[in-house]
Amino acid sequence: MSGDIDGKIFVGLSEKPEYLTLKLANRHGLATGATGTGKTVTLQTLAEGFSRAGVPVFAADIKGDLSGVSMPGEGQEWILKRCEEIGVDYMPDEFPVVFWDLFGEQGHPVRATVSEMGPLLLARLMNLNDVQEGVLNVVFRIADEQGLLLLDLKDLRAMLAFTAENASKLTTTYGNVSSATVGAIQRSLLVLENQGADKFFGEPALKISDLMRVDRRSGYGTINLLAADKLMGSPQLYASFLLWLLSELFEELPEVGDPDKPKIVFFFDEAHLLFDEAPKALLQKVEQVVRLIRSKGVGVYFVTQNPLDVPESVLAQLGNRVQHALRAFTPRDQKAVKAAADTFRPNPKLNTAQVITELGKGEALISMLEGNGTPSMVERTLIAPPAGRVGPVTPELRKLAIERSPLKGIYDETLDRESAYEVLTKRAEENAADEAPPAGKSGTVKPGPANAPVEADAGGGGLLGSVLGGIFGTPSRGRMSVGEQVTRQVAREVTNQVTKAILRNVLGGARRR
Figure 1 (cartoon, rainbow, N blue to C red):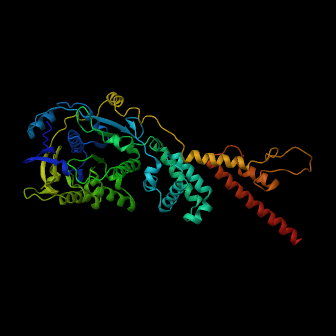
Figure 2 (figure 1 turned 45 degrees about the vertical axis):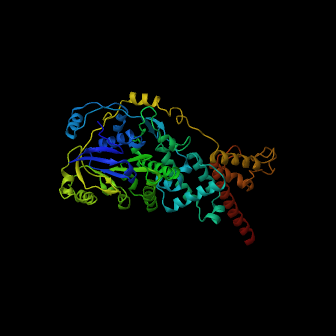
Figure 3 (figure 1 turned 120 degrees about the vertical axis):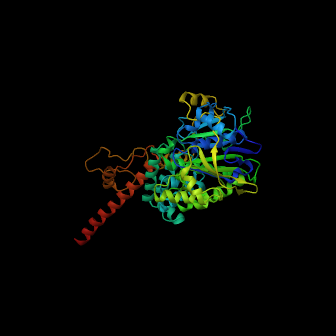
């Protein structure tokens, strides 16, 4: 049923068969259209075509609808009718699928280390302002210089506490590093953890090679599906993860120029989430990655409702276009229709802007790159139906697929090797042991004669220091975390300042007398 020919994926039928040329598939693409117009089915048709050609695919499954690709298709009435309209025979097929899930519930866990994510993406993820992002860069720099691994969120939390404790020393080297700014970052980190991001950061980190598998039996490229229904509740985590994945592909894959077919194709559904309120530096990074990653043999396809969701600098690099129906009810809708129409190579036989509002479900305007990379004239096209099942699989079938996955057991258990948290905790314990008072001087008041002197904690201040230590809750000198070290330091400084102030008043009064 596929209708594919050598080196091309059959997409649908206009006045002629419409194909996506594999050699030009790394020039990226765009699929847009209003809700309910057939974007998901088009995405599945394209993903199946790449898989049949031996090209691995990664796609976010927003509603779970794409999971059916793991099962043979069913000859539903609308599918048989569409096959008859476009002149192909219906032949159900199934495809090798690996399910992934950042939360580890509906697929293999996906993890990245804090260092791999980097300060720029983390700052976006935590909604940090410019000052806070600058301090976060300092934290990463210090960790790098001291050989401290940042693997998970407790490593980052420990480094933040260490930075706050040494803020006055670090300022001379790295510029102003205030404890208040570090505290704000720590609060943002807590919000991130409450959203479940702590399950994403850690090891074993995802290996890009595990996304680029080809099934030995069928020769089909693996379709990697990211369960994103729950993830969409944390849209910034979703967008940051996908951008991180793109960056990893860019960093790890070698230059290959324009291969006969892509090494992997990446579908970015709900693409507007990547660009909404993104700082300029991040937008520049996206543009750079999209522009350069094609030479690594990676095709990137953005899927969104409105072409205005994608910045012009990125839109200009998306050569293969599929435009489903748009509604022109509001001025913004009308602007979107005009923008979509203007991006196509005109066809004298079509009023492109008008047709966009008239398209039926499963119809689209298509313009694919051809020849030396020039776009074809836009054509009104009936999209070919998928060969796999349309719609979600049951939880039982999904679980069975995960159990049979070639990656079972590789990512399922978390690793926790020595990193920044363990190293800094050990340092804190050693420092606490070095500062402990000699035996018999524990920092508590000893019983003795009424006029005997009172011993206090080595923090200073005598009897007054002991009283203020009790007021400010100075921690004992036992086992302390990095955070407790910071608390003790603050309490000690306050105690010393108050002690000095009282002594000045007493001595000043004595001199006046």
